[in-house]
Length: 221
Image 1 (cartoon, one colour):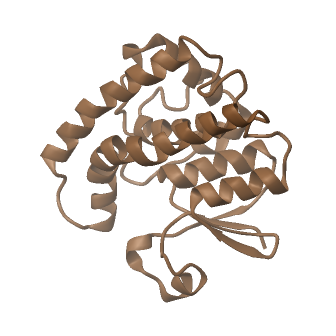
Image 2 (cartoon, one colour):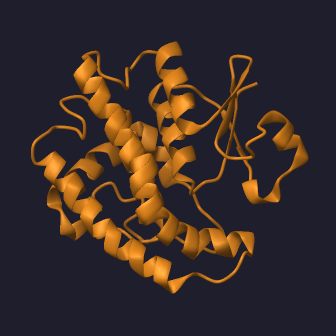
């Protein structure tokens, strides 16, 4: 049984989906809404969070733990550099997007605009949305600064850092909350990773009630 419990616009689920697709590991996608607190799901994953992956007879939770397992068990293509310093940089940037970017931007934009409506948990907080719209500018500038110096976010090779960043940005791009004109260097990087075969299933996602902008699935924007 190969199953990934996920939500289509969850950036952490998207990160795992990108890694699975890049390594050509096929899984069944099962949508799970964590706020429903299904007992059958909690028995498998006491945290109640997504993603959760059932693979190789194991039940794996937490996107970082899942991606580390996949990279060690299925090493081709590698998503962590061999050099210790480069590996540390890839992990640092992956954590940046999983933690800092997610907290300062994604929670304030995606979760307020979309998740609250799906979960029927209240109205969007305009102050949070305003903060997210302000914070994303700093992160876009940082990505652009990195890409002015490197081929990929963490160095010369694509790594888990690129997938962590692309997962967050792709979810926000679905709701048209990324100003791609702000940084040509970031746009070029995203276009490059967006064109990879691993991205195809993400670009095919459709969330009822939330149609994506016309450019979302356009590889040339």
